[in-house]
Length: 298
Ligand code: NAD
View 1: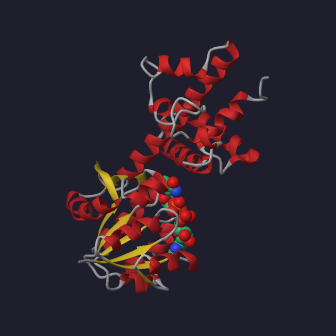
View 2: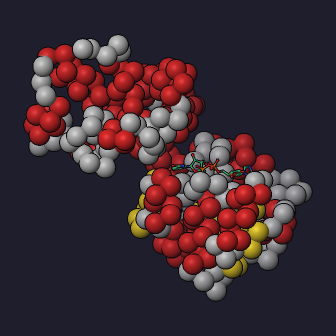
View 3: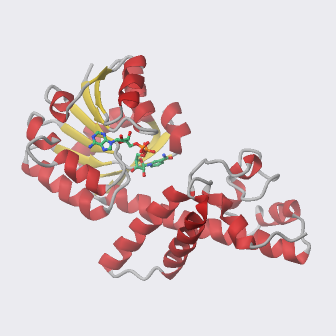
């Protein structure tokens, strides 16, 4: 069995680390939060107090941190992962971060003699707990093959998206598409309301017509048609609007740096920013229908 250093035991990292423990691995886990460390201990893992303790005897290191700045900081410097892990250690960063940071850290890792993949996820906290995440993986072929057995413990679908940073690229492209499509579906329901067309009727027609998409048929933003939608529980997340905004901003940064024209992505980012600024950051992202509807009609 493998010794795994795990840094970032939050909403996602906590249950992912617990699944690695349940599969029989030794997990030395670090988080700034004592509560998160205590949860790892309850799950059978080994909480530690420093990056060096987490990684110095590890064969594999997994990180699940909030953003690119955290990842650069935790991997870099004298107290960081790359200075304290043994050469040959496999690095898996599952945080959702900007493509530039992912590529910069992968380059540093290669320079230090470590294989690295960026492996952001979709599937949320439920997917992390159930071990059913989708991993979008960027990195060399051999690093992907080495990471796969561990990713298969934490997830169900593992896709190699190409070289370093391409996992992050896939993640932000997908989530930009999701943000745009959710707003489109919401607008269709709002227009239907104004025209006196019943929610269920629109659903029945569009779900079998050319308007069909995941935002409609798996995550319908009005209560009723799809039982598991957050719309049926007053838009409790699910996937919080703040998380969607984070991913849309990453997509806009990448679009700007690469010269891609993404006008609908820009509009979606602006709309989610407005929605979050109205105190809705913790609302499920499908709740943006309430904002698009404006004042409720009688
Ligand atoms: P979170 O805030 O719950 O967890 C992040 C953890 O990292 C925190 O517990 C924090 O204490 C810890 N941390 C920060 N800096 C640290 C440091 N220097 N050393 C040790 N620990 C440190 O966030 P989360 O919801 O678990 O998300 C993690 C990543 O996964 C993010 O990049 C997020 O965008 C992505 N993601 C989240 C979801 C979701 O539904 N929550 C879904 C897909 C992807």
